[in-house]
Image (tube, rainbow, N blue to C red; front, side, top):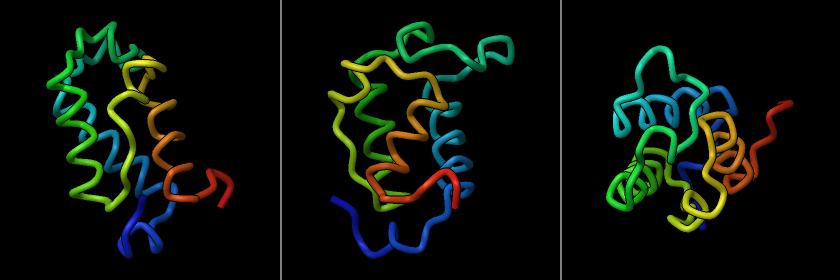
Length: 91
C-alpha cells in the first residue's frame, strides 16, 4: 500500500532515498556497492529497518519477505520500491 506521499515521487528520488537507507542500515563498504542483501550480511532486523524506513520516509510499503526471497542488490530493491509506488524508471 502507498500513501499520498508516494504519488508525487520520481524514480530518481526513490533511487536516492532507498540508496541512502540501504547504505545506512547495511553499512555498505565502497568496494561492495553491487552486493546483495545477504552478501552484506543482512539479517532480519536489517530487513525490518530497511522496510520501515522506506515506508516512513517515502510512504511506500513493501514486504520484508521481498528482501528475504529475492536477496536484492540495491538496484533491484530500488526497482521493487518504484514498482510498489507505480513509478516508472523511464519517467
